[in-house]
Length: 275
Image 1 (cartoon, helix red, strand yellow):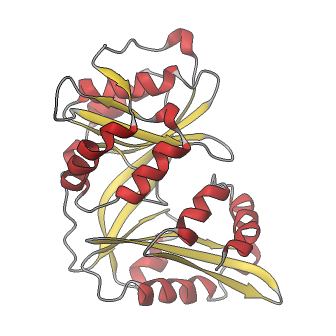
Image 2 (tube, rainbow, N blue to C red):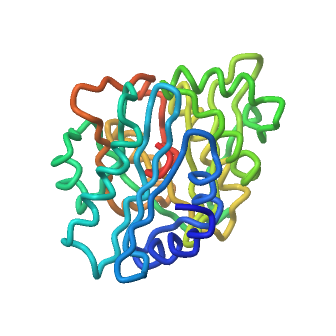
């Protein structure tokens, strides 16, 4: 897949009701150690798959098959291409919808954790307050944020986080009283909604402040946050703030792989595209 194929990828995203826009596809096609494949049938786009090779973790995403071509083997061909591209990497993962899970299991992927997409229409008049310890992130904060993120995420995704800060500075916040960051978040716009994530925090109080701060800049926007489900208190707080559960994701890894990081501090993922 090349940048000239982005309109085809966007058309497939629209047909599937997905949220991606041009810069999302460009990240896969223009960033180092990334790539994507486009499947064609009878001269028309029929499916896509993409991958990111973070140092220490490879991520498969954007598995899309035109509804008219599902069940024809295109998904299997795309998955094989993606796995060939990341062959030999120490850890390979993806986020599966319930529809895609059976395909991924056939390729040796196994369940690791459950995630939930939540969505809200932001009303600034009803936002919870946030403390003065949270402020907008600046490029000068990135060195400490990226160092901490390598520990919490378990791999180096500095290229992604730098791109998110450049794309959506209104969604990049940091909790940093002095020195070591207590938390940070990023976000990005989309075709249907704005996505908040990743969100990393030392505790739920910091995570709540980061969500409230991000929402304060997005009055009237629809915002989605993809969250782990192991912390019911966090899920309940978001629900009380107006975030309704929308659909599940199953995080899967290749059998035998051992993902790193500190999952307990990851309050929201970057999204199924980027882990």
